[in-house]
Amino acid sequence: MITRTSRRALPAAVAALATTALLAGCTSGSGGKAAPTTTAATSATSAAATSATPSPTPTAKPTGAADPALKTFYGQQLAWAPCPKDPQNEADTSALQCASLKVPLDYTAPATGTLDVAVVRNPATKADQRIGSLLLNPGGPGGSGVQMVTYSPKDFDGPVHDRYDIVGFDPRGVAGTSPLKCLDDQARDGWLNTDAPGDDHGKQLADACQAKYAQVLPFVGTRNTARDMDVLRAALGDQKLSYLGMSYGTYLGSLYAEEFPDRVGRLVLDGATSPSFSLVQHNIEQSAGFERALKAFAADCVTKNPCPLGTDAARAPQKLADFLDGLKDKPLKTSKGRTLTSSAAWTGVLSRLYGGEKAWSGLRNAIGWAMVRDKGDDLLTLADGYNGRDKDGRYSASADAYTAIHCADGATDAPVGEQLQAALTDLAAKAPLVSKHDPLSSLFDPDCRIWPFRATEKPHTIKSAAAAPIVVVGTTGDPATPYAWAEKLAAELGNAVLLTRDGEGHTAYGASKCIRASVDAFLLDGTVPTAGTHCPTD
Image (cartoon, rainbow, N blue to C red; front, top):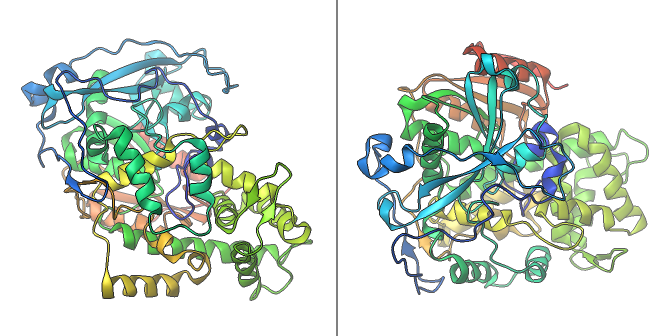
């Protein structure tokens, strides 16, 4: 779990594939460049973060490989080499190969600059039966596809890896592809864990990002990353794209299908979100999902002995929320001298709801240490893992990528006045427990109201009737991407089938052998699951 705040679509690699090593950082084959390589002078904008500048948006119908200006990008050959050794990674990466893909910084003006996209592949184990490449995205935005492959190279062992090269890449602004890290580690500690964010809380981050990455910020949106995926598809030698996207990765896959319907091969979208939602609507419904999951956890807790929430299922959720909110006035010290604030405690609790019932035992213990023994270490450790903070106090760049990508995706139409009050009323009605701590942060996550760049991207319904069939996977008890979103996306795409996991937790591919078998059959043989198929959780 490598992102910052709690009420959003977490990168799904941990929940889906038990990829716990994603908590640590990773060196990619691109060398982790912090800025684009420019072929023409590109000056950084001097606009203040409070003065929004429209972000360039490529044409609605890009010509892709047919565009003469993009010919060199689509025709490039990847220079595969052994991946650099990462001292934090204990997995055997000897079979992996790393490379760097060159893409335009701005697809409307390809000659003005380029980015180097970090790529890794785990070659198919049965080369004589190879189908092609399977691209992965673990979610976020901010999740590293390179780390997803390098830290867990055996996660796809079996029929899929036998016949596919498993390929991970880092989207724009993430890890090895011009990573965005706007605040230093000490500043981020305070910024993340404060229980009293000031009026300039969002502006602090926006100004820091603007000062360091003004050249890149306008171009990190998901639509540009979808176009990068098509360049990568061509460089890998695949006529069609095969793809498994989780959580936010379902939005990336949906945009790809919209941009390149004739290039869609076998797309699987697990833990779906609908692009037709505004960010505020998204956050309200997601908060409601966590509210439901919190109550499910509490109801299970009171059946166990011991349970720090007591034995009354009706009162247990409120008891937990009151304790977490009470940390505003009485924060807990930890053994290393740090403080467990209310904000950090909420982050730690909600982060474990992604893991479903298998994570509830550990969460129950962490809450017990805090509520009964006044020891906040375990909850703070959970929050650190979610926020991407290692034991030495160093943060990954995922949190700033999360904000920059969301804001570049056009999440800028914030309600004001009566509309704001109506949104806050709706939030309080649907998620009174998880939103009471900080309603505005729940509503504006991330806070794009003062972001320095404004994209023209708007919430809209994506249709993919012209594409090959797409498999959408939803989980009935998913807190981060509620099941209704999967139903909605499958219906909106127009040529998609919904596959359902019954149970708790975020995403389904790693939580159900039945789901995995159905998805694998689709990836390997093109067998589309029967509409209405439900699978149990293992």
